Amino acid sequence: MGLVMKVRIPTCHDKPGTTQMVQLTQQADTHTSIILPTVHEVDLFRCFCPVFLHSQMLWELVLLGEPLVVMAPSPSESSETVLALVNCISPLKYFSDFRPYFTIHDSEFKEYTTRTQAPPSVILGVTNPFFAKTLQHWPHIIRIGDLKPAGEIPKQVKVKKLKNLKTLDSKPGVYTSYKPYLNRDEEIIKQLQKKHTEVETVDLVLKLKNKLLQAGRESLPVKPDTVEKLRTHIDAIILALPDDLQGILLKTGMT
Image (cartoon, rainbow, N blue to C red; front, side, top):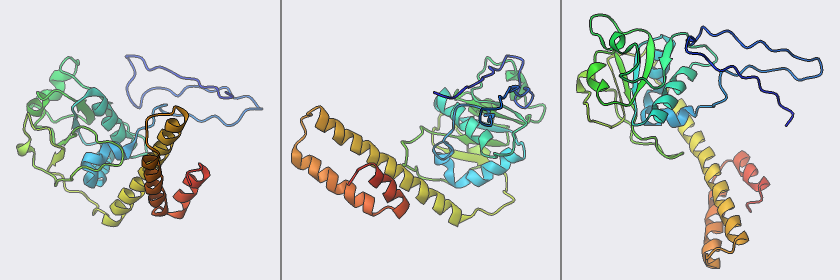
């Protein structure tokens, strides 16, 4: 494929921010090598979607190294959200510890749940409802519900007080008494929502195109008038998009 990837798998002794960089041996006739912290690219918008309006405050908390708990319904959603928090301050490097999926069996369980000392500078991702009680003394808790399909933005809620955190409640929300230093820029939030929705629309149109092509190739039982109606709706969607996104779809032969 013309690409060489050199990967170092972390050991049990590694901690974030302490691992040495992989040494690269670069030949004179090759392109400049790029060091990637991970081959997995996190979708920040999708991970922050349940608490999108508070993303600027979350950025501040991560930047300041504040103790954070992410409560999610599954290990994958917990891990993705923690990694999204760590990556949201890029290009700055997050130098505190983070655990994408923390359980009661981890060796630091007693240290992190004790109330005799302040919580450490770490981001925890958990799924066990039990943590809603044992970590209630932590200053910042983010509750993430089931992540919605791409392009769907759930109802946003205001920041809640920690005393209102319930064990069996699964509704998304941010629980903290933190007061952000920066005012939320409503215009930027609107632009982000709009641009992301437009990109997701392009993705949806491309998927519909593939379905229509599949129906034609495999002679699926789809009525011709149904196909024609879909094409008409797709054309209307494309005309409502900005010129640059229309260009992308026109290049793919949609119209």
